Length: 321
Image (cartoon, rainbow, N blue to C red; front, side, top):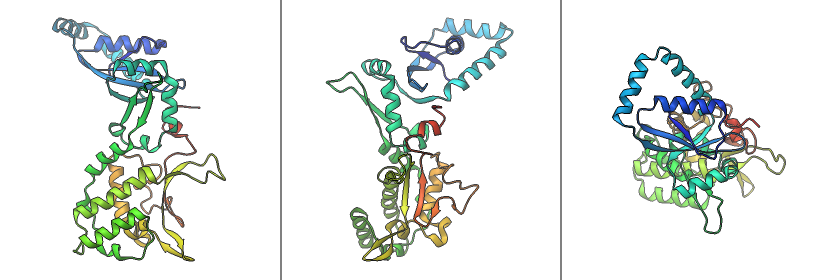
């Protein structure tokens, strides 16, 4: 269980004040979580640091635990206070520079705005892979927050086991429509891959292309012209029109086979991402819906990151507006 303290500028509720007192009582040294700022809708932005207490303090506290008759009740109360509080802790990181912490304390609104406008994929990543940077511009006291999706991609790609994914080089020779960068990648692999099965290096190059599209370049709002509240999603299109004909895309030639979607390399990658903690449960319910009927449409494979435009904080239970 975490041990909390708060920046002096934050006005505590009675439950938060009680939680801090109980945390201080049970603290025997180690990591403390400091709440730097609470945004208008209640998001908690935190930092962590390591703290020590003296041996004498530890002994006195342990003795009080032994002889205090209702310590179990107090522990249970502390647990429920934490449960209520931690549900809305949006971010926790090692301690910031004091100037940055001060700026975050003074401008909690900019924290919330940055998360609302950020790539919604940030919240789909496991909490340990939600990287961000905060800096202070020279001409402003308002901090700039950057959500580092690329760093999360690097971490995830290092954990995906491509040796478990059968991937024939036959797919490289299919007639397909591809972007300039993906066409260059296919041409490179045709030259370098001489075996019936793609090499680990070839698979890794294709994996990087898919993850970039899934998490960054392919994230778009769904029909913003006709539906301003349309959610942001990633579409892997199945076909596009070229020279008056519908042709298979790079994605449905290399990664997805509509006739055998479940065994396609792209779906196997998505399954591993799901097992690594990427939140695909509401959009790719592999356990309940193994044929992917909810996301496989005539237009291709759609992965929704939110229920409506910029609703991601509500979708994940951080705000209730």
